[in-house]
Length: 460
Image (tube, rainbow, N blue to C red; front, top):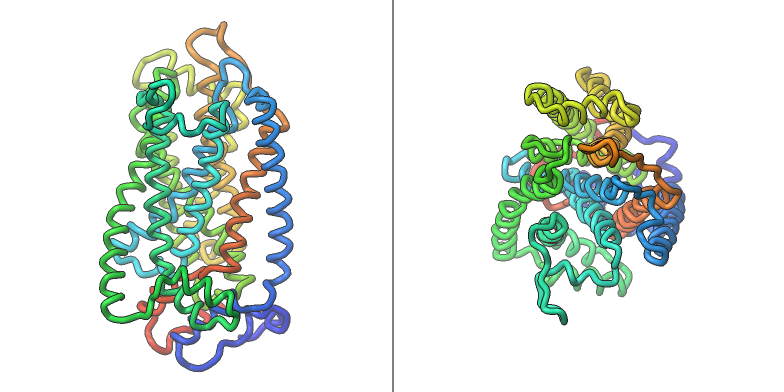
């Protein structure tokens, strides 16, 4: 069904031919082939670049002045930077889940959303890696975190959580990049063959690595893709478990708990899927992908958000129960203080965003309304940031001795680095949307029968 937008947006025009496979190729490839992206892309890129400039300026100021430019005060030595680090690592988990675990479970609906979910993973890890690197106080000496001999004959402290994060995030980024790039090779070859520009044909030809689509190449490709999926699957569970060990192995009330690994993993998948829908809904609208990313896909993602949100809510309840059942007065005080202390506003914001808001997805009418799905996705991401804030800051602000108590007072630099990190993320994502295959064309074609490539949600 043609709309008014079809006359102005080159991505929403009618597809050519009756072959559904040719339609898919044309629908995805013309995003790259269009002379100019839609106006919304320019507006979003201008906003993202502005935030990126703020991010660069704030980090430059921190490097020049020292990490005291952030609002760290004793005893809250871990403030916004570590909150942001855990938040961005969590955002990246949905991409690996969609790509690897759902692939191994043969959930074919993943094919419409897995490509930009994988891209989201890479860009989120890039954002996450910035914060520990600056938070160490000497960002010009990052090689000290790696197990290589240095001029002082000293080795990294492998009992430090910082070292665990280096290995976990480094491994996660490496496997995710390999998985992401390998999946795009057939699509890069399609872009190469369709390009009319010599420069684009040369660039896409290089990254396509000589792909010709022979049966031998497809056989090798499918075996390698399966192997990488098998390697990536344990990372979904292990990486955020390692991040949770940064807290769980301490003796601090509110951190020293064995529920953190599964709790962090469930929360990461929850927040990651929320970010996927936040990115997918504008992408399908402005790049004309409604024929590929249908309401069925959005509804399934809403169900995943509902299910993982209930797991997160269960984890919150179990934290409270275990603190009460343990009989440890310090642990009990930590959780009462979270709910009714100076940071109660952040705790109840977290509860509303992560537990209450996804409950609307019990109703099919809500699960099939793009505005509701998008709004809940934004609210959940806000809630997941506040979850990390509550875990880190409320526990540090109130430890064993009242004489050590203090309050975190965020500085303008804290807010600038938080907002600026979104600028880095969205800048990378918008460039990906414009110049790389947003949808795994080869995988979508494998699961769409002839004659079924129609727009399922024109009536919505």
